[in-house]
Length: 205
Ligand SMILES: Nc1ncnc2c1ncn2[C@@H]1O[C@H](COP(=O)(O)OP(=O)(O)O)[C@@H](O)[C@H]1O
Ligand SMILES: [Mg+2]
Image (cartoon, rainbow, N blue to C red; front, top):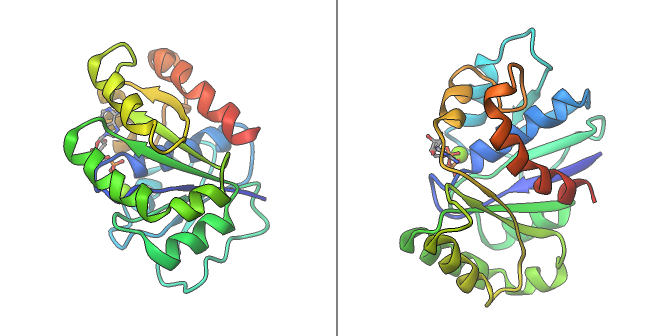
């Protein structure tokens, strides 16, 4: 079993979008995939409920009541969707329990301020977990000024930007159907699939 935690203190950063699409990727690889939803709003589980039973299956459960993060050993991959505001000893605990931590980050001043506090508060963990934590730049074109701003900001933390995901309604549309960009028909998501490739390599490395 391998596990990835998707975390960022800010609501709307793209955690659930990343968590559901990653689950869709693993499921389409015929891997036993479990989505652990830690958010009381349970958006990831709601997404799962919409999922067409004909698609590769993703199972899931609400893990927000657990004191210690207990992950199902029988899964090939567990994807953990964190709530906004996850911090402190719980965050430290969760980082220890997983193989990778993905932090989605939108390059807006508001999102970066919230993420700066978050990254500062986990400097010790960052040091201990070096190589385990990566940023996904969300809703951004890598050739823009916003991307440059993000890179500049992240220099203080020594965390890699693993990939850039563009701003597209594709994510909104597939989510509404309990699907992901990895589910068929994939042709219309070709550009997005290319952007996911570095993240998938990094997770499996
Ligand atoms: N790359 C993207 N392009 C367009 N819309 C996106 C993208 N990523 C996320 N969204 C949308 O932004 C909203 C917030 O994303 P969500 O994944 O729910 O964030 P979080 O779980 O961090 O609160 C959702 O409506 C989602 O569909
Ligand atoms: Mg969410």
